[in-house]
Length: 495
Image 1 (tube, rainbow, N blue to C red):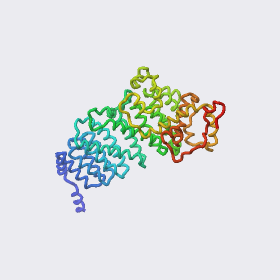
Image 2 (image 1 turned 120 degrees about the horizontal axis):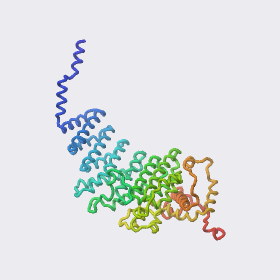
Image 3 (image 1 turned 30 degrees about the vertical axis):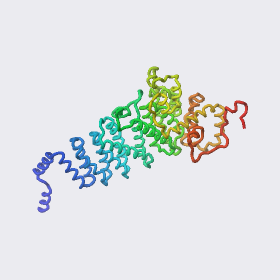
Image 4 (image 1 turned 180 degrees about the horizontal axis):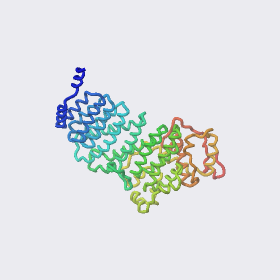
């Protein structure tokens, strides 16, 4: 019994010795303490390792940030650790380090490119989130630099390579990865375009991120190349929004991103409104009723946000019609419609544009690039891949609009009755709203665009022919379903 008690006592360290150890650790230099914790982290298990690394982060990032340069590589070395949580910690450490010292970007960006090959989805998501944050920071860092070293040029090349890696993830099988890619497209488009007089700038550092931050004397960043990338990214985002295979999560993310882009870069408003119209008419057929309801709710929220923007004046009729189809009441629409004074309207338009000018009349249907070109901008964005579909829809819509006479629409409805399914589809049941302004010019134009979008999607119509859009399941009818009312005005339809 006495032996057991004595062995039990020997397990306790005398109080004086404990106090001496604590005093020694307190007097230990911070750099020596960091070295001790890093060495310990290499020898212990997962939980203890993360505990040691978090202590290192507390010391190096928050207490003594001047030690970041000395210990960054030692922490980055843990990126090859077999534990996913440790690799995610390394990514977070690199992000915080660069936010404190932008000079570390040249060492961190290449490491992020390497970590984008990680097979763990959780780690990959964290890497993409970090890259989105550091991409903004790196652009501002390069734009404000007055001299360029070889390290900075290497960082810019690594940044471009990482940017392409993220964009290539658009075809990922994981919904979360694709949602992050959509967010990165939004960041890229806003960073690579200029602010406008009516831009709604977000609060925080994002407000400083635009092409305006790049001085004309900057040699490393080419504004025309950046604008071209913004156009390409916008086309890809529009294409993703119109994809029939998009998931509801990705679709809601792209709707939010397009709305944010349009509010911060108002010249995109006509294009985004048209994209929302096409989406409303062509929701993916595999959506369940709950998914259709969620997407429509998000669409309604974002279209209302666009309606409140003063630069949406030229698209007000188009937006109002779309909101009516989405179930908005006239009172709700009126409550969100801005009261734009003539002076405010002049400020929201490019110089030289008036309410009755050809540019103002065409702005509801023109693409963003055409509008910028006629406004006198010296360098226009390159034509984006996704805009071909929208241009084709616009051409077909213009061709259909004079055909939508009452007798033609009646004939179209009667002929389509035999093709109706025996049971009402869930998507129709959840999305149908009575037409409040049937027969008005705005409703006829809206109907023409809806028909044109569906025709273009299957590769028929003048727009699809002009733009070379076709599908493998394209159906070629030997005779038109609805006869052309312009031919019948003479008395009878020609054979």
